[in-house]
Length: 182
Image (tube, rainbow, N blue to C red):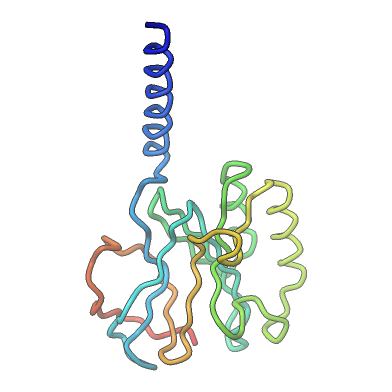
């Protein structure tokens, strides 16, 4: 009888863990964050890159013709923040719970943050200090976590979404009314 109670306790604890994970949104479907067009310059979408970890960020200074862009993606809240103001970005990132996992979304070839882009060394120092202070678990490659959002766009370009799609399960073939950033 005592062994049955121990087994029941283990089952209850395991179930409670699953329920609490669901409440914070970790069991939610992935969130589309980047659209990959069918070909360069097209707004017809071939596929989407999805965020599978709780949060994701992109700091992009690669486009020397525009101000740097800062993105914060929240999978559980289904929100996307896009700003050119580093202080707005930092304030939102600072609201995240200490120690959470953040995906440093990456792409092939030239990274989003590059030494060849607009100089944002001072802004990047502020971002790095905040990430360190909050003790976030940063994922920047598949070796860190198999759920890392990484993609190749050489054949087609890409579009960073500035608002969430209704469902990540929607078929490709969507048409966006924006132009690719690169």
